[in-house]
Amino acid sequence: MDDNKRAAAGIIASLSSTLLGGGLAVIAAEAALITYYLEQRTISNWAVLLLILSPVAVIASWYYGCTAIDKLAAEGFRGNWSIDRPATNFDRQAIGLLVSGILLMVSPFLTSAPQASNNPDGAAALSSKIARLETRIQQLEHLSQHRHGTCHQEHNVR
Image (cartoon, rainbow, N blue to C red; front, side, top):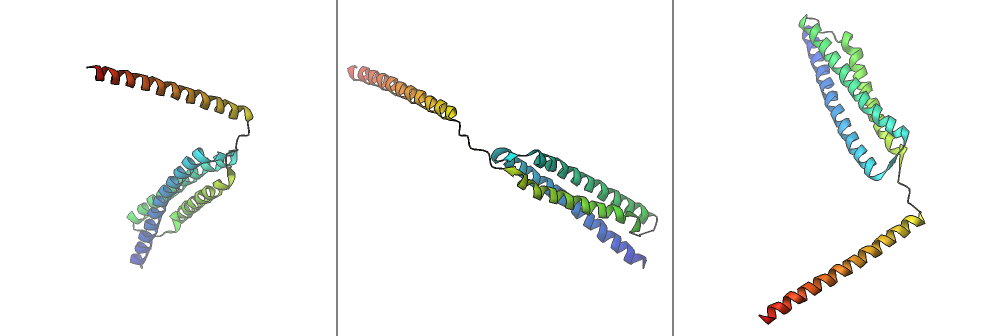
């Protein structure tokens, strides 16, 4: 009977370790989403709140998981392989990771595509800049042709 309890405790500790690794995956996914949001989306205050709470839930999950594994190991060292005492923390670990994933999945719905600018002044300023750049390119081409022609003429004289 004691061997069965020990095996059950080992399985639970292994599952908890897997959840710890799952927390890393959630944080990696969040980093990718945040990068995408910053480049391509407008982020609402609610989305920012969820993106802050998601890693907090992962960290809480890690805390509860590590605490539960520690309690399980301490009890096992005393010869008591009962999983009753650390079970609450294992439950909290799983719930924390689940909450983190849900927060992350809801966050895209709280972002939006950036607003297109209908500012006529901005379009006029852009057109003006383009015209100045085109003029500058023509000046540089003329200068380049003039220098190239001068060098070519000097080469032919020699």
